[in-house]
Amino acid sequence: MRNKIVAGNWKMNNNQAETSALLSELSAKLPDTEAEVMVAPTYINLVSAIGDLEGSTIQVIAQNMHFAESGAYTGEISADMLLNVGIDTAIIGHSERRAYFGETDEILKKKVVAALQNNIRVMFCFGEELEDRKSGNHFNVVKSQLKNALFELDKSAWKNMILAYEPVWAIGTGETASPEQAQEMHAFIRETIAEAFDVNIANNVSILYGGSVKPGNAVEIFSKPDVDGGLIGGAALVADDFVAIIKAI
Image: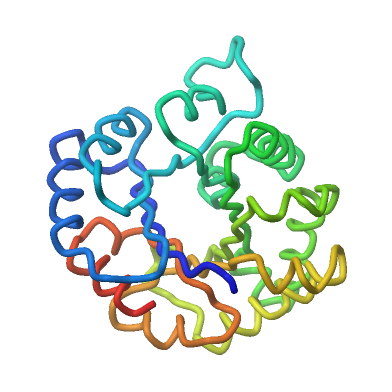
């Protein structure tokens, strides 16, 4: 049985006071759910967020992680640093990291391996640009991103993997892939994993949709058989919206 997951990626938003206030509101309004609920505040608020959520089922995860254990990587955070403050899941490969910070498939492969070697669960993000979708090359792009970063993993590593499909053209644009488009790609991703590894791994890995999920479309998107939840951006910054999305799962 695949885990249902709703994760909020807060990106570069919310100072410590705002973080505490939002977490307090989320905790108070959190519905009963079997889904895993996660939030990813900015690095400097991870420790305070864990404290704010003491006794809550909401998990705190990291937005990013470096592949090196330590060294001259100014501004970066290692796996050990995350583990030391109680973080055991990291988002890797978000489209904004790829676009704004030059993270290539090769870099992301190193990050994934480093995370898994340190027992950090990986939420691996990938997805096509608008021109890829318009040209009909979206399946090839997604398969290439998966192959280049993940296909050399040992089968045993997949128990610590979560996949998050992000159609880049639908992030922060107000555009959303139709539920049918989301299901089509999620089914393709699962088939791709089955071909590269095996059907059991493909059927057990959670695949999240990460393209402008909102309260108004969450129920329909989450109803699709290969969509196991969402990686939520803007709507995760509004407690009532995030709670409504959690209820939709």
